[in-house]
Structure formats: C-alpha cells, structure tokens
Length: 355
Image 1 (cartoon, rainbow, N blue to C red):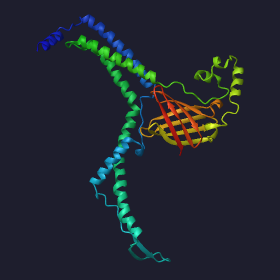
Image 2 (image 1 turned 120 degrees about the horizontal axis):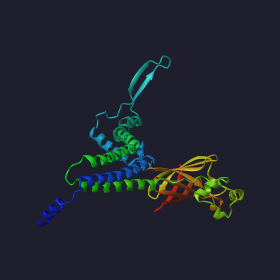
Image 3 (image 1 turned 180 degrees about the vertical axis):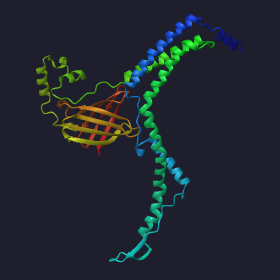
Image 4 (image 1 turned 90 degrees about the horizontal axis):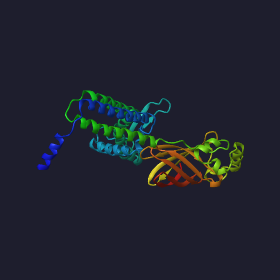
C-alpha cells in the first residue's frame, strides 16, 4: 500500500513546463514528428513493397482450402436443399424421317443408372456444392484484399499526415494535466516510429537488377559488379569489348542454358518444402528472364539471368522480393532443373520439372 501511495505521489509531482517553455518544446517535437513523418510518407509512396495483391486462384490458396472445408460443411448442413443432383436416365425413340417422339422409357442400363443415380449425386454434394459455397466466401474476401492492397500506402500516408497535424495542434490547444510529460512521450514514440519505419522501407527497396550479359554493355556490367576494370585489367573501352567478345565466344552451347529452347518454359517443383512455379523466358531480344511464384501465398519475384561459358551452362537468376535479395543457381537440362536459392540469411534447395 505504501508503495502504491509513493507511486501516486511521484505521478502528482511530475514537473510541468512553463507556458513559454511548453510552446517551445511543442514546436520542437512537432517539427521532429513532421520531418520523420514526411520521410516515412516519401518512402511509403515511392515503393511497391507495401502493396499486396489478391490471389484469385481458389485452389492454390491456404484461405481457399479453408473456404473449401467450410463449403463442404455447409453442403452437408444443407443436404438436399438444392436437390440431390440425381435424375432418371431415359431412352427416346423418334421417327427417323419426321423426328417425332414415338416412345420414351427409362433406361435400365447399369452404367447409365450408376452414373445418374450414384455418381452425379456424389459429385454434386461433395464437390460442386462445396466449391460454390467456397467461391461465395472466398472471392468477396479477395475483392476486399485487392482494394485495400492497392490503397494501403495512401491510407498509411493519410494516417501519418493526421498525426503530424495533431502534433501541431497539441502544442497550442491542450491544457490538460501532465501535458508536458505526454508531449515528451508522444514526441519520442512518433519520432522513433516514423524514422525507423522510413529507414526500414528504404533498406528493403530492391536495388538495380542484373540484366543478361551482352558483349557491348560494359557500363552495366561495371555497375553490377560482375566485370570491372580492376578484374579484367583494362581501362580502354575497345580493349574491354574485345575481352568480352573472347569470353562470349561459344556462349550458350552447353549445360542448362544450351538446352533451353527459345521462348517461355514453365516449370513446377519445390523450393525447400514449398511448392513453386518457375517460368523461364529465353528471348534473344530481351535476354534471359524468369518469374518465381510461391504457390501457397502467391508471392512473385521477377528475376534477371546470366550464364557464362566458364560456368558450364549454369544459370544464375537475380531478384528481390521486397525484403531480401535472392540468387538462384540452376543446373540440369530443359526438362529437369536442380540448384539452390540463396538470400542474405538462408539457402534452400530447388527441384523443378518442366510442365
């Protein structure tokens, strides 16, 4: 009890700024919140890492699987409400000249009876009805996700703007008790939160992608850090171009790259324990590119590739998922691919098979 009373006494004795010092401190806090808030808004609006997309494939979504289970339960609860999906097979006899119906009778063929009286009701109750219920639940949710995902950065920016405006109003219009302590606490919390948020987004922004190597693109190779003047020992542009031509002589005649056909090739397989879809686009005009897709959560990464003769036809793909940079090192042939997927802090094995 004494400890509680001591605490109350300390709270009552929290010092307050004088009116003049309160306004000065308020302007300083509001200015700090404004600067860090505008920094956060800029980072939020200049990246697409905060947007998220709907997964329109009901059958390749964890939420879709849950909706299918709920749909099955609803189908069982509402058993027979929409009929039993069964019908009577019939045989019709018509005049071959006029098409007039002569006779219509039930078909007692065992296969027809089995189809119409047993198989179709099973399909209706345990497959078609659950899918209908699941779609009625799943797709409205995905519409909301798509809408919110598209405008989320703007909503977040408006919230930050409202806090900035509130910080300036707080310095002038608040006369409550403990306003000085509240001012200091809010200033520290919002300044650190906005600054940390903007810095975190800035760090996760994807850097420059690595394009497919071409013999006359020395500036891009320099920027990518793949070939520099130090490594090849040349400063003259013509000499660098000759060196690149020597490197690319016989390029693409072996290994995985040499076996890839021109065009788009789709693979399916696993990265670690996760099912993925991997699409390689091999076009002479645009270079070697790929699209990674996580089947479970719909995450996609657009990647750029390179392959050098010294690698024996291996292909390296480079991409960024908004949180980390990835390197896919692939070997094999056009039908079966193995390799590793590495990021800053982990590595996964890859096994892909052509669809």
